[in-house]
Image (cartoon, rainbow, N blue to C red; front, side):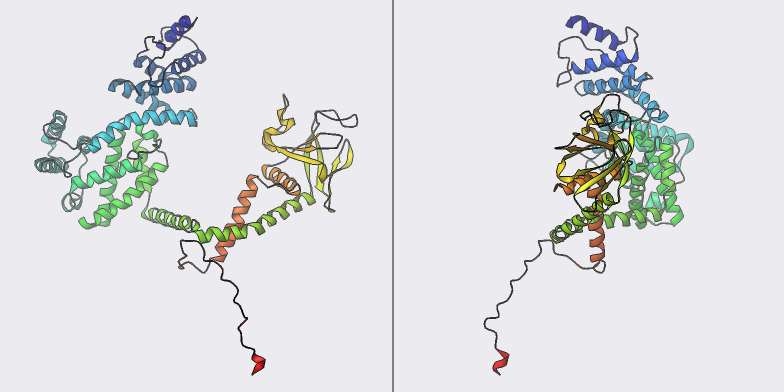
Length: 517
């Protein structure tokens, strides 16, 4: 049966037999599961060629596309995929991303990021590899620049050719242009990227400026980072990096013309444009045209405000990590914990209307219907019991000593009941001992109301409050106190080490007796 199953899976993945999307997605996942750690077929069967897997990216089913992409990423980790197939897969995925029909969940984004690393690895290699005039590819690109410049006599192309020739003649070293720079400049000349300001071409070494632009773009895209890469759908477009480079050059040239910048001002403007690139990429543009449009809309005031916000956030993070600050925060914590606890008790004392559901364990007096009913519940002012006004059972009390435990969310028994229409996020159950019912099953009207009641009951039981609202409100109170406390100490330097110990009380044993005089 194993051989017949594997044969059927191979037929489905190879596209030899047309089947439903669910069947195809299942076969793709089975094929992925059969791969070993090295990406090779574990059972020794002949593998499906990568072109067949790429063809499944044309499917209209997101489930099929995700399974095919996962299989393609695993296979290409150990096999070399042809450039033609890689670009075809990129174009198919770019069509899906630009259509924005499917939601991109965490798993799909992870697979897209892995595939993106296959596309961008060439960019990083070209950036790190200096151009050699003896290389055939470099000669072809230089001849392309010459051919494009011959009929138009474009000033930009002439300057680029001259600077490249001078840089090539200088020999090996850091001044050598990279292969990625030549690619970007070749694409720029093809687009007739002319009318650049003279200050941009003459006073600042233009090739060095372009290299800086390329490095800034690679850094903001996260391609030079050895850690986890970021997902950018714009990189799935054809010639995306070269188009973004041209957009950055045009924006830089426009800024230099508007500000009438001199050569010495260009590095400062380049720093501003690096921040603009970062802000434009945060908008997640899908195409280079949208990236350029967003880049041109960002003003210098927005860049300045972003820098100020980052500086303040960095200073605040550094201040919060100081030992003296953390020690003061811990000293203030107990009093604000008591404040939050008292606020919970006031809410419970005021009472509120909750929805109640029947428990599985009940006596004959308890209503047996699973239909919800609204009850009013409040904490008695005497501090000993809860009072519940039930329309079916009347008014009854629950002593706090009877409360064994408090359950919330999916742990509640009525949230686990089959066919239950209760929202699990708002479920609350009070587990009782020595009572007619085992659980009082309730449902709050909001998440905050659920947090308040669960925290309050836990506090009465002597347990710690663990809700999201508790931690959020406690942090807000501590932050507010510390901001007011340090309001007049903006320019005061705090020690990095722990706070000095409190000195001992001095001894007055040898103090002179004033009455003796």
